[in-house]
Image (tube, rainbow, N blue to C red; front, side, top):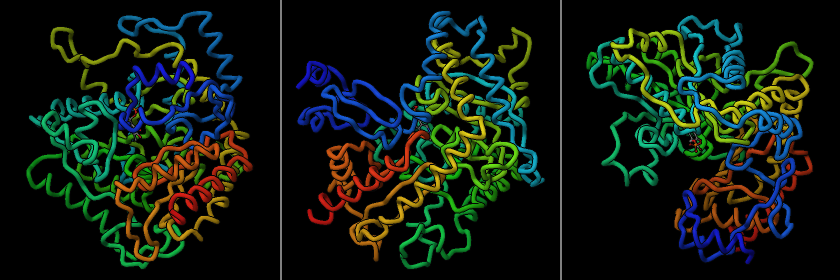
Length: 485
Ligand SMILES: Cc1ncc(COP(=O)(O)O)c(C=O)c1O
């Protein structure tokens, strides 16, 4: 074992990790990265098939981001945003507001009453971006609607981070139950999960369950009922919180097209602000939609915009810096901002902030990343990668323990099952997902399972040959760990 591996095992407590298991194995120590490849201290190469936990967009050690960061380092790494402005953060805020403008032809649906996003509050990671959104929405509801104890509505299986506020919005029992006593209550409503939906009457097929589902949009009715129930109590939610187009940590669970627009309309009609968690889905991750190369303009960078929905709060992190540095942003409207204005002595200030809020290095990386994203060539490259990913995944439908393959843009999740004909799941204690991902790692491909779901989120520079290696490693790992186990 290298010195670093030994030191790790003596001192580093890893996130979401049973440390007893960790201490029994030899840790893989990453020494460097290059494009979609990670290299360990022993010189072995691995494909970064989940983009280093969904953060990396353009590949590791991208020359343009590296150059921008070096130039920024030669000026300053960090100064406080408490009482001071700085150049990269102000430029990034303006670029984000521009990037988050809803293309006008997508905003026609009058019932959606889409607002404009104008103000950017910077923080450090996805959890803090959500924490900011929820505190702003809470206080906004109190100040503008006179609600004494505003409540939130979020989705079954929701994960919005690990700070106490973000956990309170979440509904993954395994992670959240333990902390029940620390949390505030938020209401939960059914999320679409076509593959396991109790309202879907379709028998399993060898296709994405969204395509052959038979239902009457009962999942939308459930949101309508939840919102009506709240209205019947003479109240309104301080926010409807969701991940647009797909829920990540819930198990890479995509929504059928049209779900977001429908529920957004329901919430808006009831006067409920929309809080979109685009920590994972932002910055092109959910694909180019109907955009094709050669068309004027660029595809939307945010999942919400694929459905013509502009939220009142937009939480961004992970890919914001191209996956280089921990930085996050919460975008919101003029109306929310105005609710916090007043004379000093009125104490209407948003009393919230972090030491590294608006950090210059993070902001510089964010600017470089947006430069890379906002070009025709880059959008065409993403469109191409999205098509390749779909094509490469097709061969996996022949595997008997693959239940569902679901892809949204540049995200895919493969659900492992005991029997695809019955959708019978593996017991989590069997660690099917963990074993398959370990076997993939032995074949030089890294991703991290979510229970029985194996995610693929390739960096945008991934080649077709690399995609094929990822998929082949998965198929071989399945044969070793599940089919012949
Ligand atoms: C949708 C979503 N929101 C919030 C978070 C929390 O982000 P972070 O881990 O940066 O705090 C995550 C993390 O995976 C996420 O997927």
